[in-house]
Length: 508
Image 1 (cartoon, rainbow, N blue to C red):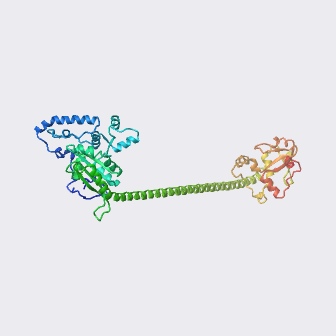
Image 2 (image 1 turned 90 degrees about the vertical axis):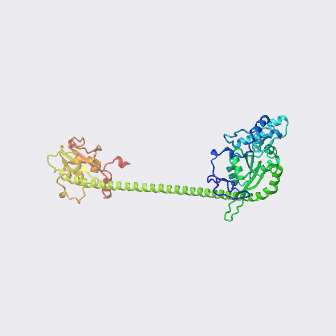
Image 3 (image 1 turned 30 degrees about the vertical axis):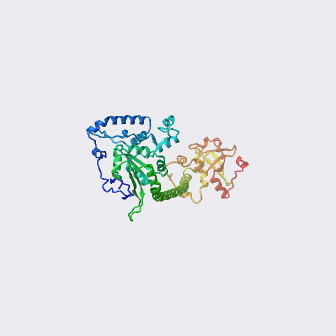
């Protein structure tokens, strides 16, 4: 397997397959923070005498490398510059570099830039990091490196799996003599770099002196450097699984096998024709799945929108019907309340009529005394039906007695005088209950007027007849005029509502 065996690093739906690489012993979980630095690959350590002799050459080589890197000039292949005899007596690296640090050092060493960074700088109108210096000196055109990705080896493999792209893993060791030549020729070769870019490769690399590239070299079983491997999804060999497996397609080790010519020839004539059709089918399948997913999502969204609109319409209709029903119920309650109020008013009116009839019958025998010879006020009363009443009253008699005398003429004949009650219904007098039962108009139902001059003789409590202007001088002639329903009732019975005098209402 080219992945580690840790459960947190394995994709849930992918399977790894052995392909030209026997890595059954790889993937063991190790604590890299506790790992001995001597486990990293390195050349055999020379003796102390050789280290001391080679120290001036190593110092000179470091000075040349520093000057060439500052001036961004590619380091030429000079034999003594690649001497690596000198080693510290106890070589250790306190911290492991990141991939981004290695890429920056590679750009400084080769005088080239990653093609992705150069494209971004051109698109934004900003020159690359070394293009200005080369142009100023009139040197060769800007060189480019492959577009190295920054990340871990495991992340790069997962990206190859997910995106169905070919991955290119480049491992170098600065301790090898061919390191500088490989970086200067192969990694900056325009044909090789353009082929990687045009074929959409994912390129990852590093120096095996660092932890992450060293881990990748163990998993890929690299034995010499420079090392180039190509990985990609391939059909699984197992008949029970249809999922593609990330597979090592080819490995190239050593300077002779990693030259730009051999790598380009291998890619164009062997690897790409064999791998690209299958990867294209995977990409098309993923796109079809994505289109179907988007279509289902759009359909689900459209269904949800339609359902929401239907729900809103139904809720609006239900709210409208509920409001209409509430209005109908409110109207029904108002009508019922009005009907109940009307019935209570009718019942109350009937009660008052019955109670007033009891009072009228009592007043007929209690308030209308028999006529005596001492009565000095002779009063003639003309009823609405044209008949006349003649009666003498005492000056001390009250208006209540006069009105009770007239009112007895309107008591129906079915109520015989002999059956009238002897005592008042509530133990009081009639004048005290007239105000409680609607007032004098509602109680009597008629009014008295003098014939000439025509003036109303209004009922008032405790007023004597001797105090009434039109009656105090021996009496007078009065006319009975019905109020409201009583007047209409007398006319319906054929009574003549005419007192023989012209009134303003008659003229109207």
